[in-house]
Image (tube, rainbow, N blue to C red; front, side):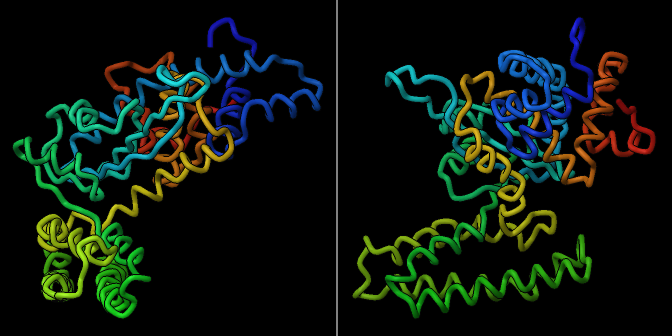
Length: 345
């Protein structure tokens, strides 16, 4: 950062401590004071913001590449950001919308809403392929009005619906959960055998399809029970499964589609973990910057790249790297081009 006394190691230390280890800046300020370094908390905040501004074009390039994926997974998670415009003394409800591409890259985009128009703005007709999501209706609504998209849904969320209905119908739910467990045993066997492509598809059709067909047939039979109340948790779980029967079978025919969105939920874990430490973001701009740095740190972890080494190199490389080749500074490509000889502090 021009005309700044903070060198790259200090900047990266701030970013890693706050966003990887979830240490709020006020605690870092206390540690610095104890070490005899006197800086205002406003200065620390300003340095973090400036560093994130430098990194944002890299995340934008990563998002552009993610939208080229044939299979894209999406989710959303809440965050308090900025003062509420309607309720005095309250924080505004916002959301991170993580997009996970087929090359194991993720970008956390921030929006102040959970409505369908956010999905429209993010994908913006730039994505055509398979959209994998949970059962939130906004995704289904978007796919229904957009040509060239296939919607796949998550078996883990389907399982969750039945698990939450277990007190209502323990015997029936246990039987259902055992069948869904069989689907995950098939996926485990696929991983152990390192199957891909047509072999993976054939294995799923042979072993998973009979389980899925049986679950759908079983759910239809359960719905015919005279004693089943429509308002019961078990009835709602059955409806959840049957209303999504087509989307839940997409993974059987397409070997590149995961059976659930657990990979996205694992990747977005730093957001709720950080939320427990720093509770909220003072502004929506701050929330956007959290998304920027978490996109890079999480993608580094997905590619077994040390975030400290990566950020130390990239923050020094930014002012000399051609903007037309900015994709080379994303963690996935950086690992191939620069990881063997990174710039150090």
